[in-house]
Image 1 (tube, rainbow, N blue to C red):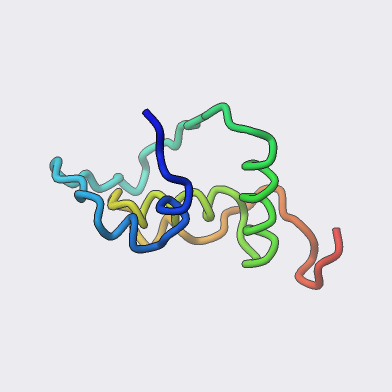
Image 2: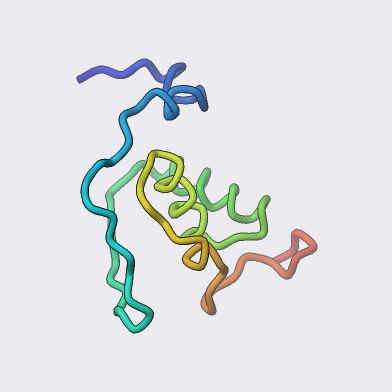
Length: 94
């Protein structure tokens, strides 16, 4: 299936997408986290990493915000930065 890259870059593209209508599932406070992995071009990884650096967020938060933008139910508490590897120290340096 071919997609129009110009429309995918358009923020309005996602607002026109149908929202996920399945039962909303709230994660229990003690629910364990599991990895979700994809294989993607290296350039995509660099772009997501750069977005994280620019926003002062880790890659997990950038991806969760993207999932939320397409209608996946992500609690605000899940968007907080968690302990782990950080890029830089807030001044752009590593």
